[in-house]
Amino acid sequence: MPNILDVFNQDAFGVVALTAAVNDITAAYGVLGQLGIFIDEGIPTRAVAVDFDPITNALLPQSNWGGPGVANKTALGKTKSFAIPHFPVNDAVLASDLQSRRRPGSDAVQDAQYALAKKMIEIRTKLDQILEWMRLGVLKGSITDGAGTVILNPYTDFGVAQDSTSFVLATATTDVSGKIAIVKRNIQKNLRGEIATGYVALCSDGFYDAFVSHANVKSAFQYYIVNGQTLAGDYRDGFLFGNVLWINYTGSVADPAGTLQPMIDANSAYVIPRGTSLFKTFFAPADYMETVNTLGQPFYAKQDRMKFDKGVEVECQSNPLPICLKPLVVQKVTVA
Image (cartoon, rainbow, N blue to C red; front, side, top):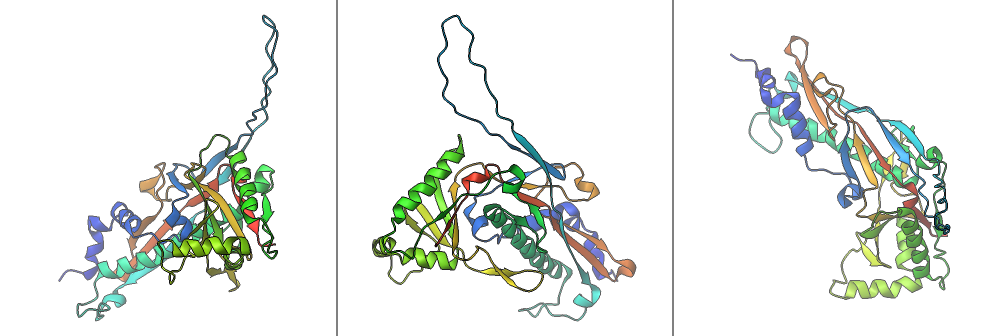
């Protein structure tokens, strides 16, 4: 009688097939992942070099005909090399997980393929969450892992400071449209050759509530939900005002101490351009012999038989580093 775990010797359970399977699972990145702001790029190394290029557009003075030209003055750029973080997650499918077990929601006997697929989905969800958290860190200016360790701080590393604009939403007479114009001009100034197709703001609960209830926004919000919309709708997923899509990014995650940390810091929002090539997520290859010096993929999966055929060990991993190549295009706005 064949061993039930012989299934794991099939090609479908090799690193290539398992990696393809885990990458094919429907992504659950969260808001930033769904918006497609970040462009995924595989690299063959475990570090990436990022250039901060201070190109200037100073006006040139004229010169005399036949005389010498003006000496070009090139500002010194900065290049930083960042290590790609490594996120492996381990689990196992044991013979005892399969023996005399019924597949949930079915009369069929539990099988190895189903058990492994369930493990991979669970792990992929965790890897998706840390990726979304790191991408949010790009906006906040500090990319951290689940333990709170700082992986990258673009403002400190490149010696610049993030712009922050107070919308003074507690004052009824505040010109909110004027505040938005300031923020967009700051973004346009720092795009330096990049073209934005639009703008989106990710808002904390407190900021979004204060924003849509402000006197100078409230009437526009009411027209927005009446004009071809339903009054019973929920427009936290996107309200267009000042040519910026304002999205309420609610929710929180637990830090190592068990304290809930909001996805967007309280009473704040982050305005970013859309349609640029400035937001990247670099993926390094997995530390497997099969993937040495290959272009990194977002997720990898592999299994290995346990001693005495007690089961199989399963590992999924992701090695991402999200970054904004021109961090000054990210604008923070606050309630007060």
